[in-house]
Image 1 (cartoon, rainbow, N blue to C red):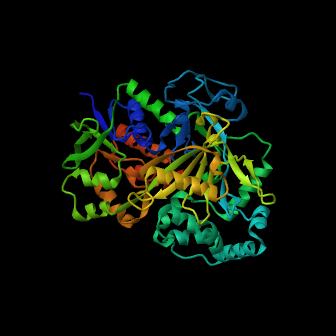
Image 2: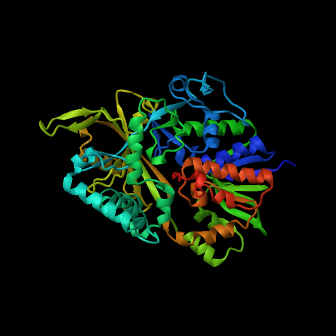
Image 3: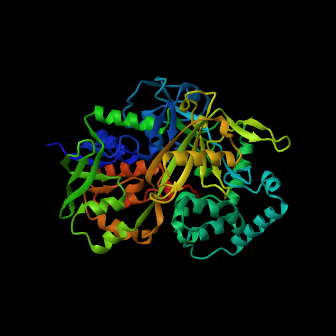
Length: 533
């Protein structure tokens, strides 16, 4: 009989696992997705022809394996391939859509919709109603906007941090002060980070910083800016191998958002025989000894319960829910640690505008504002919004009418807190009010707005996280159960890291490897670090 893999979740990790199994093994995947959408938090929501990318997803990786994978599914459009020098060689993966190569061996798509665009990255900080470069730099522009006294204080505190760093970095506060100095930390990092996580920085593990902003520091930001100016006239290489992820200048992006890529992957795996069951919520994970034997799922459309047996099991569901549903003699402390894991939830409000507006300080009149940013980090303390996305700049095809501006306002919250408990209409009005309050729009320019809620978007590095290794070690004793992806591993991975965890898990199956250490090392080993020694 053909072997079967039960995959929980149709996000990047789950769909990558299914694709890899079909390409390289004789194992047939069955994918269970509890929602109505493909892609997990990488889905794209279509609201009246305007598309929303939940959280923003830049398609960029230091892993050639991931970059090749993406471009196999969605090659570059012809125009981008002519402008940018990229060299990708397809090795073992069969190309699934019509394509050809141009003179520089770049994969070029012939399908006008199923393409990757190359987009310029611009992310800035909005603070005191002024725009600052991101990551923050001690530049002439920063000096002018902050003033000489504040800038001198930043420089002195930075030098003090370099000369007398905090020993044994335990908290995120330690991590950031060591790299940026106390003044800059208090100005640009402390409040924003606490807005994101809802807890003080001195209660968050330094591991979050080590995973998310590894190699970034003032010195590296300045060096990168100087190098970029020197190489401004040279052709761009999308690989950007020696560039910190937070400093990349360009990235790939699907024409209609990240969900388009994952919808195509879902189409490809089902066309090859995989089963995809939508709106099926896994309730119980059945075990026997050190193996998982089946999962029990509830069909949300009918209420019926189904039992699916398998040989291998991939879980991208939150570890908290996985352990709660595990039918085994789970030690009491493991259940308690898993139950104590915490998450941060997320609300995006899409606001359609005639245009952004900016108030002229001299005349007081509002003028149309054109911004090239993809993300804008909102540091203003008098508003709850944490970040803005300008979807027009991610891809012009994300917006139905190019003469309008499609903005995503991002709020970080916890399910059940005061903000989450507001009605959608109250949240819409709050977002519109705050966008006008920070001086980037006028109420009369608002055309429409919609609210999207996402639970468990960010696994948190506090709560019982300091004992997570105990949970990991216990779950790893089930030899045919593979934890992959962001929530599956309770690890704040980017989508490329999530994909790599699934790829390596399939590598292990194909090679008969029983240990899981190489999966957990993704985004931990130096090969996957943003920092390069």
